[in-house]
Image (cartoon, rainbow, N blue to C red; front, top):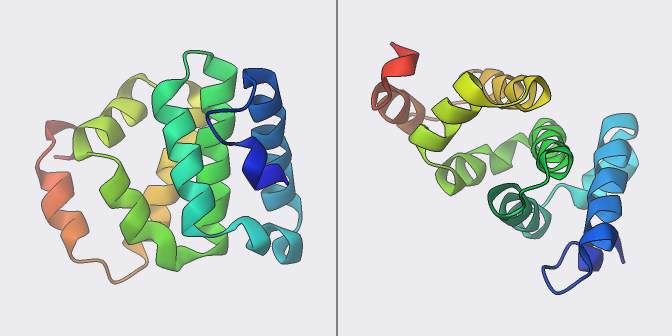
Length: 129
């Protein structure tokens, strides 16, 4: 039900509370959080991150993505291709502190995984030099 509530057709308040609930579950419980650590949820959360203007909602989506990335590290290549290196760098440079923290966490996870496209992608942005 929570995943369905993330859909863009839902009321924004419902979407926010569903996102916040997923953020809290994925932060607190590995077993329960793993049920949200899949591509469908990440896709919905990225849509939220990229489309909403409310900063608190964007932070919750970014932190949720970060938690999911920790729970299922195999999703990182998909996560990293869902966001451009420019968007990633902008989040690290200009994002709210919690967004920066979430993206740094994802970057740290990526650096511990064999993901060869990461070096190429990061070299595209001056901020990573």
